[in-house]
Length: 130
Image 1 (cartoon, rainbow, N blue to C red):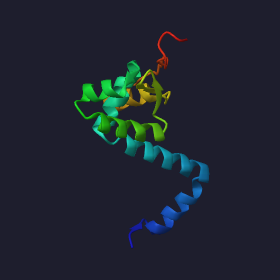
Image 2: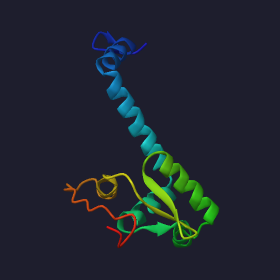
Image 3: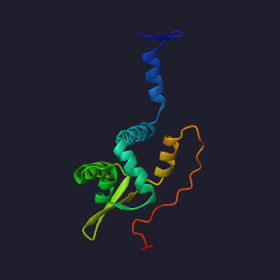
Image 4: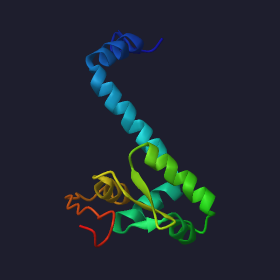
């Protein structure tokens, strides 16, 4: 058992965990899950592309040089966790960013030493249908 200045670490950790509310633990767990979803480079690239434009699954697959099936699997997981939306339109599945802070999150991840002021302009899901 490890001791820190006369305090056993497991006891200290139990005390700290008890200080965090159930809601905060759930929020942190959700955040951890979100980061796991973004743990694949292809999904980060997809999110980055969708921040600036609405794209079809086939366009995403082509841009990333992956199969349409693979792109669909990545997108389905991202949709399941609230990152993107997917809607069938004229025989295509169009994808867009659903998470409002995605642009800010990616900007921070790309350059963590820079203070980023979010100026998020949502991309309309259906261009020209506002």
